[in-house]
Structure formats: C-alpha cells, structure tokens
Length: 238
Image (cartoon, one colour):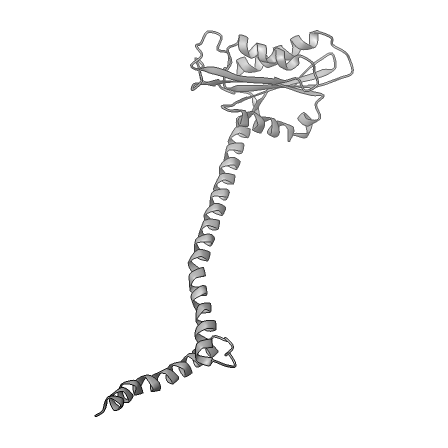
C-alpha cells in the first residue's frame, strides 16, 4: 500500500466523525433553544452556542453564594430586632411609678427604673411618653447616673424638659444619695398656681421618696454597688 493510500485510510474516520459531531451539536443546541447560524455551521455552533452554556455554569455558584449571604444578613437582622424588642420589654417592665400627689393644684409623680446604659434611659423615656397621661404632663424632668466599672467613673446626665434647673437639681440629688444605675423622672401637671422656688423642693422630695422606697439610697455604700437590692414593694409598675 502506497503512502497516499495509508494517509487516506487514516483520515477516513475523521472525515466521517466531524460531520456527525456537527449534526449532533446542531440538535443539542436546538434543544436548548439556541438559533443555528446560517453559515459556517460547525464553527458557528462552537463559537456562539458553547460559550453560552459555559457562562451559565460559571454564574450559578456566584448567584448561590450571593443568595446565601443575603439570607444570612436577613437572619442576623431579624435576630437583632428580636433582641432589641426583648430588651425594650424588659426595661419597660422594670419601670416603677409612685402615687401622684398634689401641691397647690399642681400634681407630681415620680418614676424610677434600673438602667445600665444610655440606650436603657432612652427606652425608659420612650415607654413613659407612650402613656398619654404622662405625655400630656407640663414637664417630665429626668436625671440618670450609671456607674462604669470599666472606666471607674459615672456616666450621668439630666433634662429639665422646660422646667429650668430642675433636671440639674435632680442629678445633684442622685449624687448626694450616691445613687447608681438608675434613672428617675418626675412628671408635673401644672395646676395654674405658680409655686416659685418651692417647686424645686417638691420635685426633689418626690424623687427622693421614690428612690428610698425602691432601695436606691446608697449614701452609706461604696461606688462598687448598692448595699441592698432595689425593690418595688407596693409601688405601681408601668
């Protein structure tokens, strides 16, 4: 057999196989809904159709990873919201309100709650102001004092709520009583009679009696903590 005959015999399977491959590729891409090119069918199918499948396969892992990350973020967000809601319920349940009393037509009422951070103070104020009666008060004066074990000092602040200097006097009372980890609020409903400087005495006495009743008077204790656990026996909770 000559060299040319041997070459023809070797190439014959390739000549037969390539058209069959092209025909199979046409049918496969037609099944995927990919249009067949009008010319250069074999080359066109390889260039136009095959990369589409490769691209789709490469995108799926990225999309799955992105979807997983989104689900994780949603789950974490829901957990954070549930934790915040649980904390808000706990702080609200800890608020204790004293009995209102009237002095020359003005009514005063004290509210006390344990707090460990400024966010707790904000939750207490939000809970109190959600009460329509308290929200309609002429003034809701507030002071808080929180002991920071890490920094070995007090975080404290106050709010007059329109009754000038009343908040600062409440904070001074907390300092005198060595009160810590508590917020006190005194609501006043103005009755039309001006009380003058006497109003500050009434406001502080209202707060002091409430703090004593709840066990927050630590004038003989160290800064590390109260000598006794606060209590709310006989007092109204919000």
